[in-house]
Image (cartoon, rainbow, N blue to C red; front, side):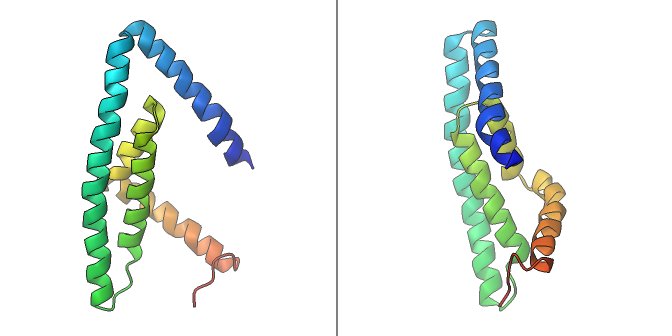
Length: 127
């Protein structure tokens, strides 16, 4: 429940405040240009990285390996693309962090721990 409050109230409010501040500081057109550039560039990067992750998943599945990290990378890239399509600076930073491999390598252990915890509590079942 607390995540929903953060997601739907605090983040949009902070994004709006930053957009207003940016519009007052650097101007309306540069702010709109930045938003459009990150949206278009982010969509391109998400597509490129997503296709790379998809080919890695297919390769692992064809060799009868579990796609584990490649699957997590694919979900992170998808989420990063969604964040980049949302207008705002905070979501753009989060989106770019999820698109690039270095930051993903830092958060992947946390995702593994979260999944393991869910499996241990029988909230995720593996069959």
